[in-house]
Length: 253
Image 1 (cartoon, rainbow, N blue to C red):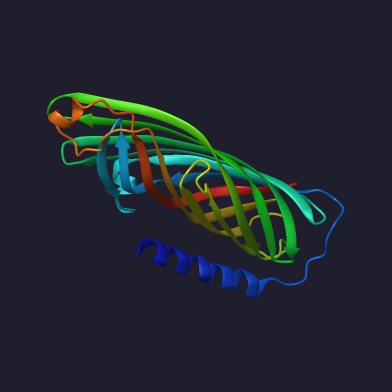
Image 2: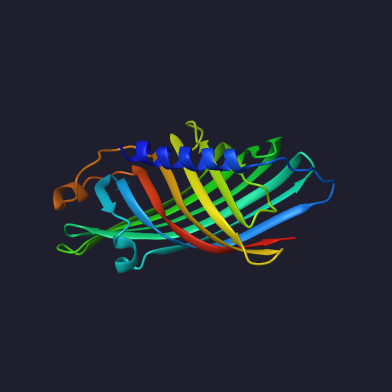
């Protein structure tokens, strides 16, 4: 259900982007776009740290009350039909499930190449380095389990956009990756609306969905409890949708 709603939003933005896009002239000059963002981070899904599994659900309305935020940024440089890009994400995600505090720090660094498909679309392909630091704290017994993982996902995606000279600019990043090489599967949808303040600067609004299904290690997976915590396991799982609003500034050089 959640994926269906997200894809519906993505389709609406994509249709808007392709409908508004007009003819753009290609240039032999470098066109560089850099945008730092702040992001409110919510999370929903299932996590397991050292075999202890917890279901988590922090809705968008909980974002500001729990003060869980993230920082991110992206950079894209184009010349003619080709380009290079990269983005960085760091999110502090946390919630309380019954008597368990769930805290995850999630970071990702991506590098990719772009190929222009037309005046309104680019295809990109590359890799994303993911890192997770997970901690489960049980209030009653005062027990804490933690673990961290780092892995690399191949990624491929599509970028749709309106012409750069418009005062209002729509962009849509869509991406899939993992394919069992790192994560079992991962996807991302990131629509933004930019309002040009000057020729070089714009105010950026958007919403980002990032879903990761990653698992490593072996051993039993148990619900939290004293008996379960006595079982030795190195199982680490993170099947979580992270989402939230973004606000930032874009700079063009």
